[in-house]
Image 1 (cartoon, rainbow over the protein chains, first blue to last red):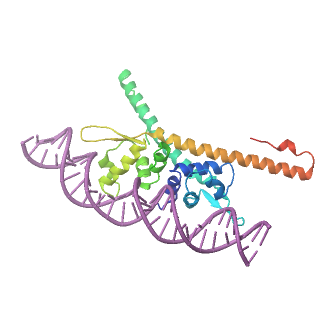
Image 2: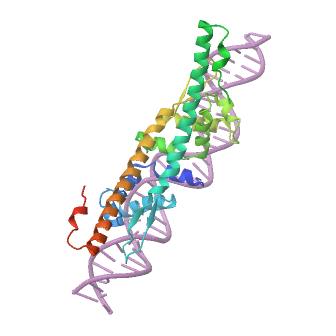
Image 3: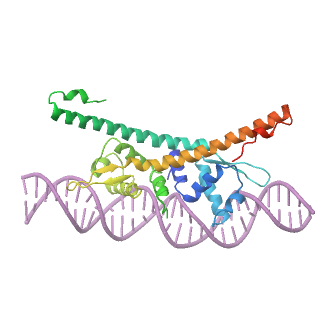
Length: 122
Length: 122
DNA sequence: TCCGTCCTAAACCGTTTGGTTGAATAGGAC
DNA sequence: GTCCTATTCAACCAAACGGTTTAGGACGGA
């Protein structure tokens, strides 16, 4: 089972309906009834989707009489952005080192004996 | 089934093992055998995880004799970052409008009759 | 109080997922 | 050719997912 937070959040967004709910909620809080009207599925199905978003921390439900306004916790998107950005950068830096090595080899062919200056390492 | 690309990519990252594979591959290509050594599960299970990443476009498999080096297609992370950033901004802008309205109301109380200037719309 | 509305709970169902084991395929080394 | 290694294929399984239907609970208004 997806026990960790990051997995739950990624999984929560791995569904078009749930992504649409999030998109919708950026425009403002809404009740289940209001949200459910936009989809073909049953109101209960939409409620389940909201529960998934809630367990991921992406959404909270308030209480106003019988109505339960749903609120987007937009800050919970940040861990995902951070993860993506981290590994995008890590991959990018590797390419840069690779390019440096290749440039070193190219320089080696042109001017043999001056290679080591380009060999960045850490 | 998750037919759309974005759903497949989010789903692919909604698993700790697969995220670890991606992290690992930012350091360089690797074969299935090399990768599988790091995990407790069977080699076939790791292969299945790679297939999931492959169907999401996050990874491609080369061919070098019997070995099939796995390569990370890091650019496929961008649509996710874009999606997250888009709706983070959209939510943020809404809060800014909300703040403007609230500031307008506060000004209203202090100086009744000058309200409309702060009512930004759309 | 009674009614209608809003939402949640629970049972059920078909499909997908994440793992297993066992067997098959294909290259490289000898 | 024969063997070893790297990978894939296939069958199977339990659990989770995404939906349904039916029922129930809680609040507000006439």
